[in-house]
Amino acid sequence: MSVQFNPAIANLQQTEALRPSLQTVHAPQGTKVDFGNAVQQSLDKVNEKQGQANQSIVDLLSGRQQDINSVVADVAKADMSFKMLVGVRNKLVEAYKETMRMQI
Image 1 (cartoon, helix red, strand yellow):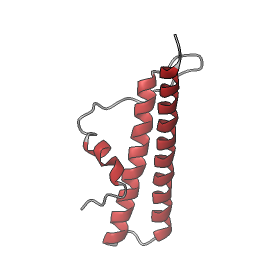
Image 2 (cartoon, rainbow, N blue to C red; image 1 turned 180 degrees about the vertical axis):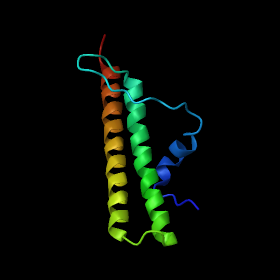
Image 3 (cartoon, rainbow, N blue to C red; image 1 turned 90 degrees about the horizontal axis):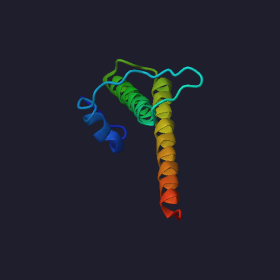
């Protein structure tokens, strides 16, 4: 049984099986990190937190977990990470629009 806490990321979870797995990038000081990989890793972390929150809810509903405080904490972490992701996305879109308005 799967409980969708946040239907806005259902597409991310469905396409997870289609994309290749990425290795974690730990860049030493002074080296360049690929922007696409950094964004993908952030999306993966947010998706992981959403999955943990979903699993906590399922465990609580099925009786495997009795501590509601940990479930609320998992859901709050997932919510906060999703809001942060949306905020970063909005800033990126705003920066892109500003760049497109520049005169050459």
